[in-house]
Length: 110
Image (cartoon, rainbow, N blue to C red; front, side):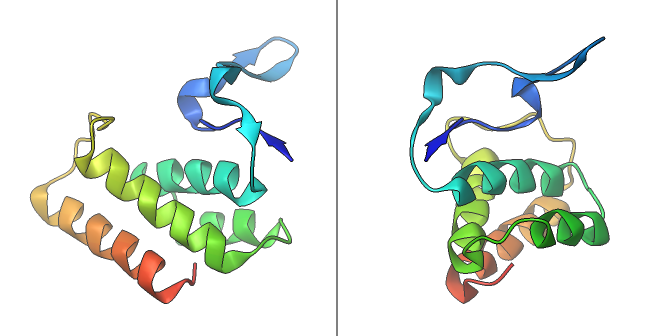
C-alpha cells in the first residue's frame, strides 16, 4: 500500500476546503500501521487523552502489535534522535514517555 511516510501534524494543512496532506516526498510502499503510528506518536507527545487515542486506534482494523512497535519507535526517535521535537516537557515527562514507548515495543500492545 502507498503510504505517506511522515504523517504527523506538520504535514497537515487546513484550508477553506478541508484538510490537505502535504510533504509527500517520503511516500513509499509500506504498512498502513506506519502512518497511523506516526500520527499516534505525535498525538501522544501532544498530550492527547488516552480515550481519544483509543478511539483512533479502534477505528482501524490493523495489526496492533506492529502499530505499537512503530508508535514506540517514533516516540523514541522524536525524543532522542536527530529529528527531535521542541517539546516543552519536563525530564520526568520525557522519562515517562520513553518508558511508555519502550513498553509499546517490548509488549507489542497499544
